Image (cartoon, rainbow over all chains, first blue to last red):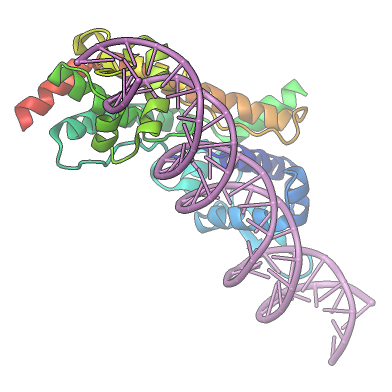
Length: 139
Length: 139
DNA sequence: TAGAGCGTAACACTATTTGTTACGCTATCG
DNA sequence: CGATAGCGTAACAAATAGTGTTACGCTCTA
C-alpha cells in the first residue's frame, strides 16, 4: 500500500484539536499542515465518513471531534484514511497461470499478512490521548 | 516505502533460473516479465551488486545465479532491491519543532519498526528453493 | 571481424498524489 | 434580508515515481 503522510498529518491535527478542545476551520488546519484548505477538506472528509470528526458549514463552522482523544486510536485514523488494508503485498501478475509466480505471490502474501497483523496490533494500542500526553510532558 | 512489484518479479525470475539451471539473456527474462531488456538489466544490476547473480557480456553471455536457490532467501532479494529498510514509516514534517508532531511521529515509527521486524523474519524464513518446491508440486 | 549481449544515458509515457482555482450551498450576524 | 464565513466538489495544473523506449558504446566469442 502506498505510504503517504496523511496518517501522520491527520494524527497531528486531531491531537491539536483534542488539546484545544474547540472547532477548527479548514483554513487554520491547512496552515498547521503547510497546505491548503481544499486538501484538508478532502482528507477530513474521510475522517468524517468514519465518524471521527464532524463538519459544519456557515459562519462559525468548521471541524470538531465527535469523541475524546482517549477514544480514538491510530488504527481508527488509519482505517478512516485507507480502509481495511494497511500493507498491500506487492505481487506480480505477469503470468497468472505460472505456478512459480503463484508460489512466490503466495509466500509474499503470507509474509505481508503477518506484518500487517503486527502493525494493526500496534496501531490499536496507541490512543491519541497518549500522544497528547507525551507531547505535553515533553514540551 | 513505496511497494512496487520488483520483489515479486525478481523472485519469479530467479526461481525459474534456478530450476532451469542455465544462463538467461535479458531478452528472455524480459519476455517472462512482459517487459523489455533494459528494464531487466536495470533491476538485475541491483541483484548483481548484492552478489545474487552475475552477468557476462558478449556472445553466449547473460545472467546466472551465483549460488543455489536454497541459499537465497526473500530477504536477500529484498535487500538487494531496496536496501536495509523494507517499510518506511510515513512521518510528517510540517513543524519539526512541534511536540505533538514529534510524539505522533515517534509512535508511528515504533509501530512500523515492529512490523518491519516481523516482515524481516518472515522474509528470512523463505528460501527460493521452497518456492520452487511448491511450484513443482502444485503444477 | 561480425554479431550477440550487457551497460548506460537520455527521453517519453503513465499513474498517482498533491496543489490550485472556481463556483455553489449553508448558516450566522448585523 | 444581504453580506460574509465556511464547507462541498468538480476540474485542472504540477510534481513525482515508475516504466517503457531508443540509441550507442563496450566486451566477448565464434
